[in-house]
Length: 124
Image (cartoon, rainbow, N blue to C red):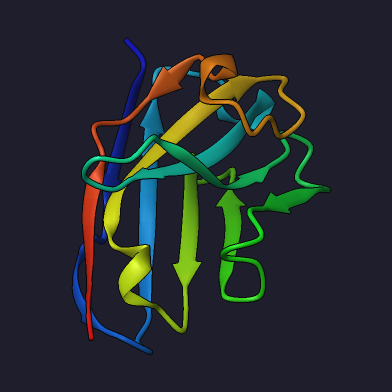
């Protein structure tokens, strides 16, 4: 069965850094575009970043560009989200998602599989 398990969330002060990991199993990781989304209380789930299954392209939301970096390690079937210069508005539950042969869609409906999420809280 397909599983996506996020980890690395927690409490961090504004300006700090955090690295999220999403370990996958049960799928051919190398053919899935991987994305990160986040959802704050009372708000819609929003796109954060994606990395093409080819590994040759990345895409970021304007709100995180220059601060966050998405990467993948196909040997470990894992995708990462390095978050630097964190702001209180980055506080949310962060979700990992997989899109088979995807081209970095920003729409959550286009992703095939989802993890359970990991909480990121940034204090001021």
